[in-house]
Image 1: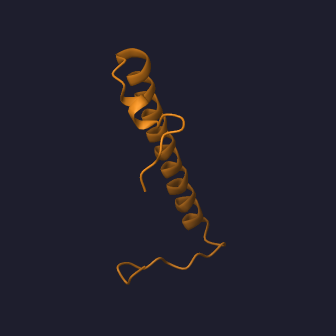
Image 2: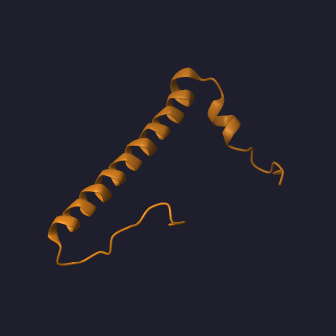
Image 3: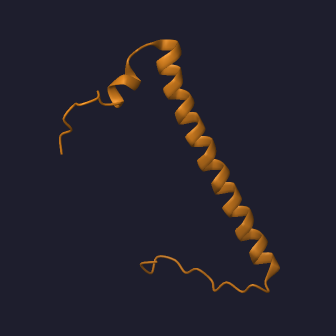
Length: 68
């Protein structure tokens, strides 16, 4: 990728490499899921507990013109 690093050729017979790729893939998936969950929880915290209007400022009012 842009000659910054090389990705080795994937050999389906190489179980060690397949296990490593599976572990990395699963870990990244769980991290993304956790970050998305924290993000949604923070939005609900602002809306339901703190009542500070952050969520309503992010969601445009119905019929409002959007600037492009």
